[in-house]
Length: 217
Ligand code: NYM
Ligand code: MG
Image 1: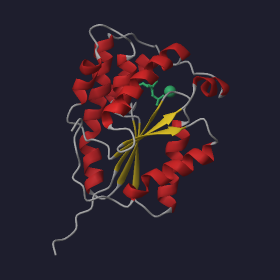
Image 2: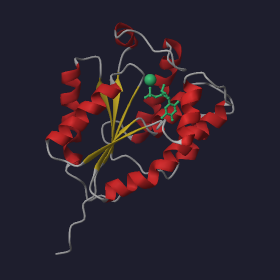
Image 3: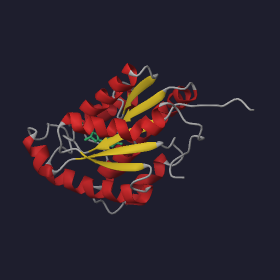
């Protein structure tokens, strides 16, 4: 029998700001570690690289940038990390990713610029490694408000978040809600959300034999 070749799974967590995403990502990482599974956390934007520093400055409104240019930098930030993500997956490590290309489309397309259509926003990420599963933390505007409101970064206001949510909905439909994309009710207590995420990733966390796909195959 040929040797079985397992790679790590690529798991993406998406959500609006105040969806509890960061909390859930670390809870999921901890669960994997406690289960003895090799795991690596990646976060986009990765603000530590030279490109990431430009993005960080833009998000904090310390600098201005053309909307197209910043969109491409967010994508470039993913491309610069893609080889090391692939390397980790091939080494059998599960990669948990806090935001990915879907945030890139959602936040940029939500700007409603005539020159930044959904298709335009999607294009620079074509052929990036595709997640095996994406879990979308679905938080209601009421709950987000209850959680202490938004922070001071760019995009962190109710009106923008609502538009972003609509684009996320479209992405979910295109990827195939219920197969590779799951919307998870994030209005619940964090323990309940964590439990559902853990259940959802069960078919993946021990590795997969499926070849890694590319966006948007
Ligand atoms: N964001 C994130 C984008 O606009 N495009 C992208 O490609 C990515 C990955 O950055 N409000 C936005 C969404 C968030 C902000 O993310 C920073 P976080 O997870 O709040 O640090
Ligand atoms: Mg944020």
